[in-house]
Amino acid sequence: MPEQSLPVVDEGASAAAGPAAGRGVSRRALLGTAGATGLVLGAAGGAVGYAAAPAAATPLTSVGSDRAMFHGKHQPGITEGLQARGHLVAFDLAAGAGRKEAAALLRRWSQTAERLMAGEPTGSHDTDVARDAGPSSLTLTFGFGHSFFSRTGLEKQRPVALDPLPDFSSDQLDRARSNGDLWVQIGADDALVAFHALRALQKDAGGAAKVRWQMNGFNRTPGATAHPMTARNLMGQLDGTRNPKPGEPDFDERIFVPSSATPAWMANGSYAVVRRIRMLLDDWEKLSLTTQEAVIGRRKANGAALSGGTETTPMDLEKTDAKGDLLVPVNAHARITRPDQNGGAAILRRPFSYHDGIDADGTPDAGLLFVCWQADPVRGFVPLQRKLDRGDALSQYIRHESSGLFAVPGGAARGEYVGQALLEG
Image (cartoon, rainbow, N blue to C red; front, side):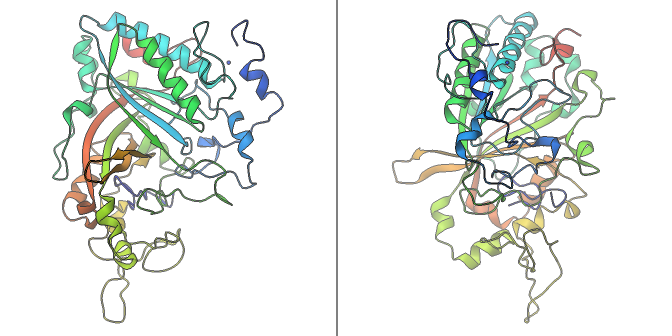
């Protein structure tokens, strides 16, 4: 809902590979006649935050042919459109493992990621979980937590921007499900393809690292709607109306670390804030439609601001009704999170919804796996969250249950692995 940032509905800154032998027909060969449909739009022109099909209706049978690229200036999984299935995983290095073991692990992970994203099996020990599928827009993204640098003796290379996030009043954090030495984001438009990647990376970790926590998420499946539209979250709200979009004049400046960065290994990288935000759906669903819309500041049906117009019409914060009351309440989520109300602070939200079952009392454990990207969290997420702490009407219907901040280096060039400049520099 954020006019630009919040953990729940985002609205942002501006109205924003060789098959193994002996396996029969390869996954790549299966794609030969399928043709790419372009669901992974990224910087090529897709609006991040949109999880529907391209303008021409895309048959679901073609979704598997869509492919994101592993090598590039930036890591995959940042500017691509929302994916139908996701896994977020944090690892801690094993006792005794250090810089050498970490470098070997990132090399293995990068090689596996390159193969899987090309629709190829991992090698001779592939599990065959995704044998019949294409790449399905698979992306794998890797980052480093604050603790990674002390574990590897690289404290002098730890960015200042990776300092721990401050405490927020809405936090009820489970420390066991927060932070971590290493972080991996997996996204795909097929659940088996995503699981296959998760299992492959876990096996690659071997004795070098162990899983600290893991979370599973989802979004709407491409092609599920009659035409492209902004995704909805579990509150039923359109989520992503004003997300920044690649191609906007200040997009790179807000989202990516500049090439002149210090430390140099973070050039063209980004910082990911990861929060598990539980939605108190029983309480939310008791509200009338009018009250829900007042909390958010937008119409539930089409995402239009309460001040009028369509989803993309700029919000008029001063417009009043016949009684002189503001049409967009002063504590509405969309008002509070607008960049022009926060010194221009902006983030790129790329979340997944989650549902982890029903508690004993019948309460759904469901909400948002909030992932946001920015060039510097001190100028992005932190000021926005502090503003929300001071009076967001949505805060009583959500609970922040885990948190992490990770430095995500730039993309790997061909023949290199992610993080090589840090680990071998």
